[in-house]
Length: 473
Image (cartoon, rainbow, N blue to C red; front, side, top):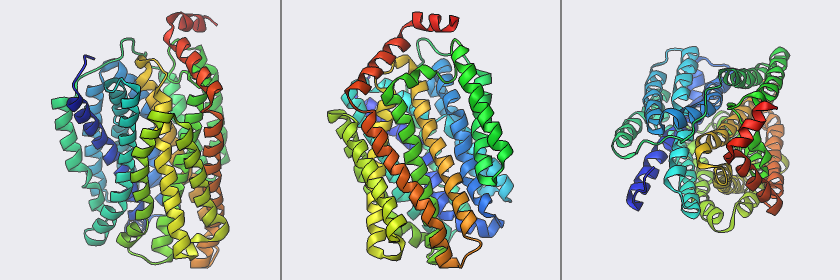
């Protein structure tokens, strides 16, 4: 792609951030609307989980396919198709007459969403070629998550309380249409110089793996757990044999890349669980309106908004280690406040828990993305970014599935308020454990030895002869 001016680069960043905004806003808005949606559509606990997980599951399953397809046929073209599908899916969700159709239309949204985030990150990576400038751009990108977290509960709460839960999907329509027009006008087309071929068998195995695992957790079905294990074994055996696999397992020889993948799963599982537990507690147990529940979570969202661009600057100037250590420490401390000290019973402790979690989550996003794409050959940008984005969505899917299952097992048999608090205690320990994992993995995969492994991996990936040799083994 030819060199473009600074203003044009910033405009491209803004357009890509618009796509992240509607995708992220959709999840935070929906969390606040869950109780109202449940009441109108008579949804079970599992039904509420599926309204979230149907979206994140399809998103996770298709992100890598979307990233490699965009590298092959054109990033702008795939990005525009994603905007069309996501906007159409949002309209259909607002009209859904039943829970089953809402879940189906959420999947339509997710097909479009899969074409947005990894492709937008690939566009950013190829637009901002200077490492420091790219790190700052990724920090801004991460800050959009904070904006969606801040605006989502407030906008969603206001819409749910005044118009109804269906209106939360209307927010995506003007933003999606505006992003579509601006993309057509200002984003240049780009492709990988040596794009990867399609891998339908690998794609099918990924879908079976993620779908069966999620179903096994939510519905407590051991047969689907066995199916997911079989799909994982199939991936590990089949993918290394392909010349151009859907998931290039050589990426994971890089310790920073592997660490970023694990950290993304843990951090976003913690986020999804945090939002799910808090939404139900604030509205069902404390009896707050959707808007007031959104206001309660504002400290967390505000800290995420402040910390994300700061994290991007730290990654650009000092590397990912410090932001990851801060993120792991504060997320673990937040979970510990609720798990061991019953922070939900005290306004001060609850506020502290929200602030700590917002700070940690704001710090974690930039190092995940930057570590995933930096050091890799630019031709692999779409695939590397897609793996990082997939890890985020897998984390959200597992967070809602696991923590929802923990809550569902304890809530029905107990008194309403005290029963929910007791049932949520294991969920908070899981969230604290995710924070500890971010801290430990971040410390282990951000040192000099880890950077050397990333350099060696990038050299192998950039060498066509290595691929040829690999294919013959």
